[in-house]
Structures are given as C-alpha cells and as structure tokens.
Image (tube, rainbow, N blue to C red; front, side, top):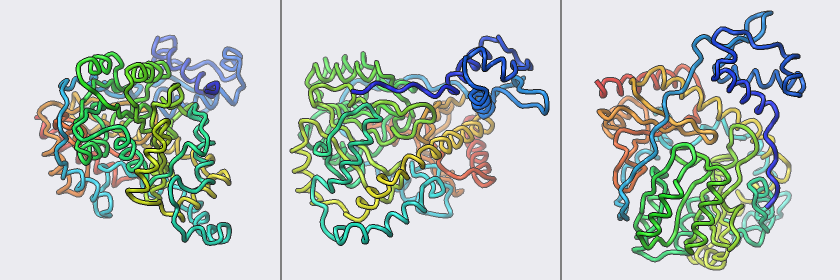
Length: 477
C-alpha cells in the first residue's frame, strides 16, 4: 500500500471558503476578500486562489462582478435534500427476470431517443481521435498478434499497463495477477462463479446496478440487500448483522461512485468492510469501473488496497472511461486467480486481441492520463447541469444524490409518482430513463429513477428534462 497523495490545494481553499459561506462568515451579497489577501491567509499562490474562486463560481456559490471582484450569491443554488439511506428487507431472495433492462439498454442505440436511461457516455465525451489512431497503428507494431487468439490471462503488455495504473487506487499488483476479460460484466460473473454455487446467498448494496442483479440471476444465486447510505455506500454494521443471520458466500460491492447512487466510501469504511469480510471468510467482489472518474482530487483508493489475505476479487474495465464498445476489462482475483482463469477459458475462451492491443498503445503513450484530466471535469459539469435542471423542473420534495464522481444521478420522487409508469410515458415521448425497480431484486424504489448525465448539454436535453419534470409533477399532483 502506498501513501495517499494530498488533494489539490485549490480544492482545499475552495472547501474552506465554502465552509465560511455556510457559516455566514461571508454572508449573501458580501464581497469576498481580494485574491492577495486570500493568498496570504491560506499560504498559497494567487493562481491557486483564482482556481478556487472559479470552482465556487461553477458551484453557484459566488458570482463575479466587473472590476469589483467576487460576491457571495444572494440566492446560492443548493441541491435538494439527499435520499434517505435505504432500508431493504433483511432476507435473501431469488432474482427474477428483468426483461425491462434489455429495453432500457436497447434505447441507448436509438438516435431518436434522448438517452437518459442506460449508463452509456455519449461519444462526445470519449477520446475518439486518440483511439482511432491507436487502432490504426496496431498492425504496424504488433505484427499479426492482433489477428490471433488472446487466450487467458490476456496480452502481457495490457496486463502490465492495468497493473501499473492500479497503483493510483492504492493497489500494488503484478501483471501475473491480472486476468483480462470481455468488459467488467464478464469479470464480475467469473468472480461470482469462482466463489459460489447455485442457491448461495450474495450480499449486495441496495439499490445496486441491474447488471449485477442479472449476473446473480444467471448463476441461480440469491441476493441479500444491505442498507446503503447515498454518500458512503453500504453500512458495515448492517452487513455484519446480515453475516450473523445468513450464510453469505460473497459480497458484491461498488465502493467507488457506485451505480446508481454515486456514493464513495471513505478509506476507513473500506478498511472496515474488508476487515469484516476477511474475519468472516467471505470473499469481496469489488466493481471499480467508475473509480477513475472522481470529479476532484486524487483517485479514491479501492477496497482492494486494504486487503491482506487475497480475499478481494477486484474487477474493472475501460467501458466507462475510454469506450463501452471496447469490451476490455479485467479481474484481479487474489487467491482465486487460477479458478477465474480456468472459468474464463472454459467459457469464452479468449478476448478480442485488437481492442486490447490498441488500448495498450493508448495507455503507453500517455493518452489516458491526458484524457482523464479533461473528462473528469466534463462529467462534473454534466452532472451539475442535470442536477440543477432537476431542481428547476421536478416536483417539490424530489430528492437527489450528490455524486463526487461518475456520471449518473439517483432521484427519489414523491411517493405518488410511479417510476415504471413514468418510464413508459417518457419513452412514448422519446425520452429514456431507468426506473428504480430495476435496481432491486424485490422491485423496491418504485418512486425512484436514475438519470445518465453523460449527454451533451443543449436545448434538446434541457427540453427533455423539463418535459420529464412536468410528467413527474402531474403524477405527483
């Protein structure tokens, strides 16, 4: 485990100023101290203060006045109240077929539908030019390897790049520990197969990503929903109670910017979860597919960073960062590596070589790091814009999460709003959303929905959100 880097200084200055605004040290309409005074106060450069002020301006807390400086907004925008922590039934259940999932995903490919349903980033957010160059350069560099099978564990050079980049997540991994997969979904399914048998109980967050529920259903497992906080994720005390009551064989969690809540567990909570599961002998399957998409500061560490006994099966992919069409994922299965590698070969045999080698080139040339520096800010602004539109257009009492990474937003609507009925009505008007019941094996969250914010902002999206809000207001009336 390596030492965690400090956050950017301008973010620390912005936090301090935001706290001062909340404490009314700087009240509505007050002028902030000049940049030189703030620089001296915080012991930073003037450029750092300017960057902090730009961040607060983006958040709607302050406004610039020509030749006068920055002032606290008289009516600063505040996100609505967060959803309450979930309280699911404490009983394992079989996951029934979710045919609606396929319809939500299929809408992502329809250009006539405004795609707020499936968590698929619009192509405008992706590094298309760099990826095309990487794909075009594969034959010259790899001399025919791109046309061959890429048997497990996958191309060494790709595994080397994956292992190197996990250091940012606090993980010291060797290429030999990595198994390349067809996206994170296969990595998660293989990990589940490696540690469970049909009928076993798997602990999950509630709500949780419907793709995980589909994997549980396909393997004939039972899902046990655990109370989950919208800010920090699964509650360790609730998980401990569930482990006391039920024969849990695995925990399937997304500690970093979990889908759909966007929560991010702090280091101490991650450590507590890992230690709890290690002490009980329960493997942790960690989905870290959104971990690289923190809006601010250093990348959060993975739960895998805190394990000591090889009981964490760590999964990820480039689907949410580089491109969903690449299908380049991985598993770092700890002590279950040999089992996962065998299951990979006996199942899909290999992974497509060309995409994996193209990603290798892209990573080696530094394109990934440059891209991440840009897209993290792009996603932060996209989520913020959708969040503000929801606050403007949706019914009174609507709650929404405040994710610190990723690109999805979870809404809790007034109880009178039926999310499934809203989904059907919205789709009839060319707007796709993901209704809440998709994210629970028991059909909970009937007045919740998830929005994909990774869409280009413009009049078309603004109109769609306004129309969706109007439909929700009608249902709530």
